[in-house]
Length: 499
Image (cartoon, rainbow, N blue to C red; front, side, top):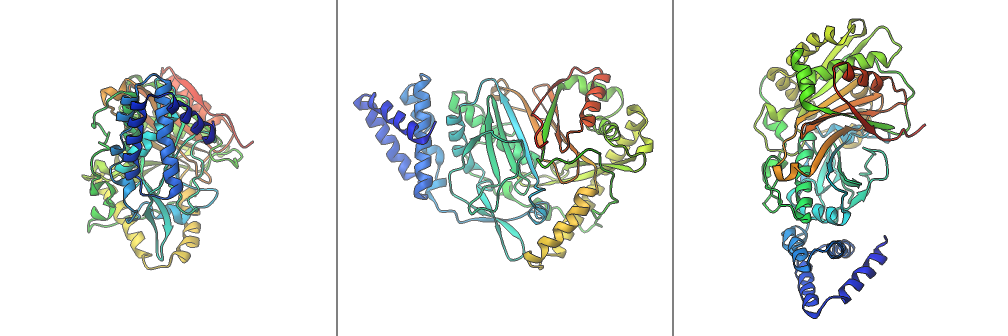
């Protein structure tokens, strides 16, 4: 429905109100006006958002007084009544993303929550408008400095959008005032997609949970600020936007990131990235039991299965498969940051070694344990910060082409695929009864034909595969392996694009 039609509909609604209710509305919008000291067009759109939400409440039988209480302009705080005057330098992990960015490779990931009823976009828009003030680091735009990109505060309307393209599509950050995240909806699904320069999976999940909690409040369900849900009416904590990489560097030795090229899976590369996303839903308890019976963690078990799947997806008989496993550094250092604070472990096996799942699982477990050991992670963190500091004074226009060449070799060719497991996500009880499941999708890079990610909530473990080729070998072998473990698997996903 167009804005013009909606405005007319709202006007018609106001004409049905009594004199007392109209006075109540007038007083409401006078208070709102005092909270909106932003550009004329942004202000007009925000006012329209409030009108659309009021109209939604009226259509759904919610009394006007209740609607205005839930939509109180005081929920905006002073966010839109003060000019944007802050900026943030990038953290060590984020600095490589804009340098290496091109049309064909942009690090975007998605987190989604599936609710027990279809999303009301009018209320989701208001939930985002109220939530963003608690995440000032997200209310930003990317800009070019002399030596580095940086993140600049942006006071604007941040829209929610109906989902209309493949997951993890590129975000155009080149436009003035552009945002580095998006909020999408489709039926009962709320999705947040982030350019990795902004945050990692942990920070993104806190944002999604806080946004979902605010949406449920607007629907009439109060959700407490616990288990990763932030109080959006509280003041932001400076520690949440801190660069904890630089704080946790020690004087110990550092390790580099260079590795031998890994073999890549076969299949023609798609022009659409990703060309398909496939979800495997399974009982989390049964998956955990299957791993425990084999003396392994769930991450180790799924990683081992991915090696078998990679072998099934290539005609090569010799070479090494490298699987990159991101590691949350908050498990090693006390941190409240919502920015990037992750590194990775690298697990590798030769094709000749991949005889069966049970045969390779002990070696995969050993490598993972060694790769995520504290000393190993500390050395990699030292290396990341050292690398950034070594080119600190090189002008940005020189860094960019060099970084693209380096990233093209090291970033893509050094690994075959990725497994990112966010683990078990806890939700407040009041939210858990409305969230059926969640999923986590990694955007694909230039060469990896498949990327895997995983999240568990409410007893449902969801393994997602983002594809870069139509060759179905990887996911078909994964499904067969899961069934061989005795797991009941529900398969869903997107259509195949780009062919």
